[in-house]
Image (cartoon, rainbow, N blue to C red; front, side, top):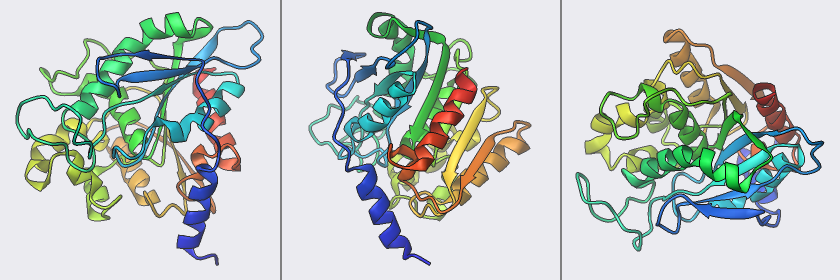
Length: 296
């Protein structure tokens, strides 16, 4: 049996070995430098308007990981015929980033920024229809699928669940999102279990502003607490993932079932965390097919 640490390192090295792929265009959805979306037009289309795939990158909500590491994945999807929007958002650990005054103010924590990370994802999703009309005229916004990897998988699930947030929450829209569905890739989807397993070195607790804030904020941010959504949801997870173990995805699927909703859970044998976004890996083709099943 291969050493898990060695396998993880090799998979990560492969996923991050691809050169960054420049977008066809980039547009801001706010004034902060991180409030931007990169657009990738579908390659080789036959004239039919393409489904729009919105990508939210992972990296434990930490500033040292940005959208560039998933640009090969975005390009892979574009070459599969999708129109792609790769969203950047504010992450934690950047002392130069401005922070909105309010509870828990001060410099951002190492993982995530409360509330800016959530402000940005909500603002980006709200702005995307108009931005896509300009930058992806070949896209069909009626066939929009959200996808995200790891922490980005959490954000994709959260974005699809905004309409079930408590009334008065600033991120809550007036109506459910016009989505075909969500494909979450190894998502940090169940905060209670993620904390128990110390996923990404305490990132969930840091995202919420520390242990003292966990109970207060988890109900607004934990996908497992925002069910049912009524949005078609699929999770793709490597059985051999040691970064975000499969138990986290299974706990989310169980929480959905208890809420009366079915979540599709695809477990891939001998696959760890990074092949899901690695264009050189067979797992990435599985992800594209899951997206296609919702989009077309």
